[in-house]
Image: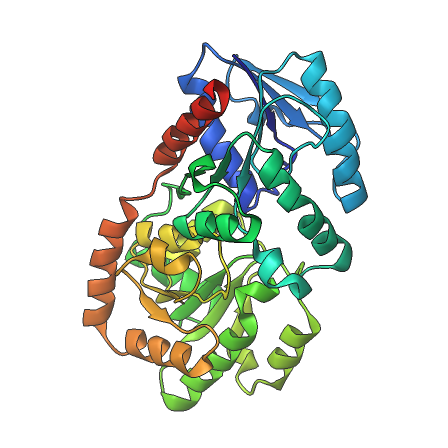
Length: 375
C-alpha cells in the first residue's frame, strides 16, 4: 500500500492544532506500519524533523497553499499530479481539504464545521471557500474521520452524509503535560503574574474562543471577590477583532490580564501545570485539546456546555454557558474559593484523561485508513 498525506501544516516552530494532530498521529502510524510506503506532501521546503521514519518519502509541492485561490490550485492541480506520479493508493488530508480532480480514494479529517455556524468569524474569502467546498469534500471522500461524536453528528446534519461513512478519531494530548512542582508554580507566578495565582486561557485569540465573555467574566469575578487572581492569556493575536479590543479597553481590571503571546511547548507545559484553573469557554469546538492537556497537568477546568466540550470534559470540569459572563464568573469564584472542589476536579480529570491519548488516536485513524483502502 502507498499512502500520500497532506503535510502542508507541518512547519517547524509553528505547529498548531491540526499540525499537532498530524505529527502525533502519523509519527506513530508510519513507525507501526513499516510495510506501507508514505509520501508526505509539503507545500514548501520541509524540515527533516517531520520525516519520522524510513518508509516516508517527503515531497515539496508548490505553490504554498495559504490563500483560498492557492488552496484550490494546490489541491486540484498539484495534488492530483503528485498522486499520479507516485502511484498512490490513498490520499489522507488531516486538515479536511481534498482534491475534486482525482479518482484516488481520499480520507479527510474534518475537525469541525465552525464556519457553517459562525461564518462571520472568518474573513470573507476563507468562509466562502469553506462553505463552497466542504460539502463537496464530504461527498467526494471515500470515508471521513472526525474528532468527536458531536462533529460526526454535525457533518451528518449539515451535509446529509451517511453516518456509516464517518469514523470518530478522538484527539490525544501531549503526554509531556504533567503536574507542576511547587517550585515551578512559584516560578511561573513570579514570571507572569507578580506572584499571584492565575486563571489561564490557551489558544489562538479567535472570536469563537469567546474572549469577550471571558474578559467580562473575569471583571465580574474581581468585583465580586477579593481574590488576588490574574488572568493569563497564552496565544497569538492573529484573529484579534475590534469587538475583543473594545471589550478589553472597557475593562477596569485590564491591568490584571497578562498577555504571554505565543510561548514554547516547554513553557506552555509549565504555565498549564501552574494555573489555578484553565478557563476554556469557547462557543464552538470540534474537540478542545487544552481540556485534556489540563487534565494531564492536574489543572481544574472551566469549559462550555456547547458542541464537543461536554463530551471531552465528562464530569471532570465545571460546565458553564459560554454566553453568560455571570456563569463563567461564578465558576471562577467556586474554584478560587474551594481547595476541596479543586481536588475533586483534579481527581476526576485524571480519570477522564485516560480516555484520550495520541496512541489511541493513531490506532483509530489506522482503522479508518483500512476501511477507506478496503472498501
